[in-house]
Length: 163
Image 1 (tube, rainbow, N blue to C red):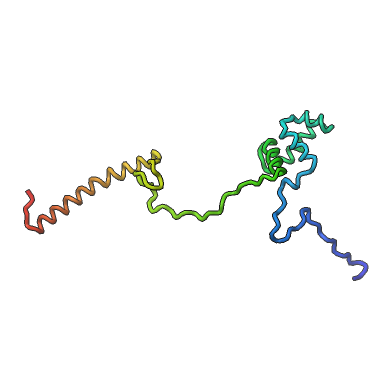
Image 2: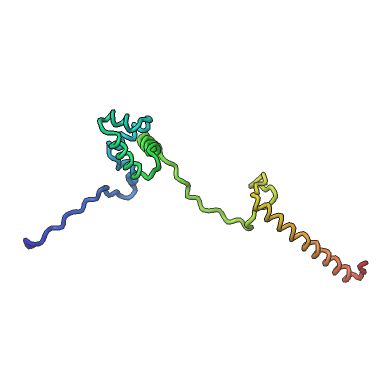
């Protein structure tokens, strides 16, 4: 190296890299200790002024730290953030949805209008009831007409006269 070249400075990651198999750090682990303390007091139903009085800060400073924590965690209220922190610290794990494969699509878009082994009670919506009513109203006369035509055709084949 010459004197004009500078050696590359190592880049430090804000979050240490994890090896394969380790669980990634929770966003709750990345909150400052002050934010954690404020959230613990929020969980005790303290107001910002009470928290400020207890820790020797202004209520506005408390609100600002709680807002940062709330935004960082992506929750809508300070109480939800406090609940998440308490659950995290007590070791309660969140349940995530199971990775079940989707079931096969039903063969017909409308559920049957009769009770089945899967649904013992008829649970059709009003739109499904109207659809089934229309289907039955259209198919019944067509079916009766076709049946009458088949009977007449069979009678003609046999040699009977229709009266």
